[in-house]
Image (cartoon, rainbow over all chains, first blue to last red; front, top):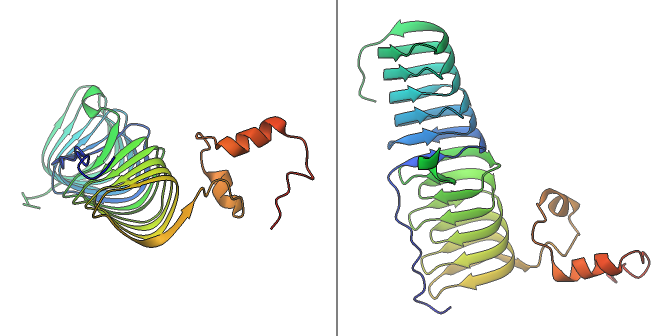
Length: 118
Length: 145
């Protein structure tokens, strides 16, 4: 137990993930990819964001790319948004490009925005 | 969900502020300012955690500041901990920096009812479980203070 067993396998991952079942209240800011599968009451700022089918997000989402399989209630600001067939989105969508699969629930106001780099 | 595994990861570039509940395994490589209840928490070398942690196992390789209540704590060589540390078992590697108030067996002391109620008592303490078995002797179970 002395000293050199600190083989703590701590490769810092270059991504973040919030697992299923996790409940969060607060703000997440990431510049690397983020996979959100839990429940969030708050805002997300991310580079590349994947909201998984188990996720429930209430709050504003700002990202370069967003893929939504789960539920989102709030304002999304993004360059590219993809809403898959399992997505459920209510709110406002400020984006440049958008793709919506057949079957997605969308109740939103759309605002076309120029491409940003943030 | 297979690709997620069972972990929640706060990556190196992430900044998180708020409250995390119901998490099982949490890895922190970024900056977190939060209250966290989990089973296992790992703070990576680059990680920085400010806030309260309640967990069964906490491995600290980065910087921690706050009030930690844990069953087992492992402070690796690069760890730096300040604040309050309540633990049942503690391992400290050569080089770890602890600048904190350290309390052993915090679960046994029920002076703070909030602590003993809120914690998930998955890890039973030997002496309390013995007491529970012999039980039902209210007057003798009173500890002299």
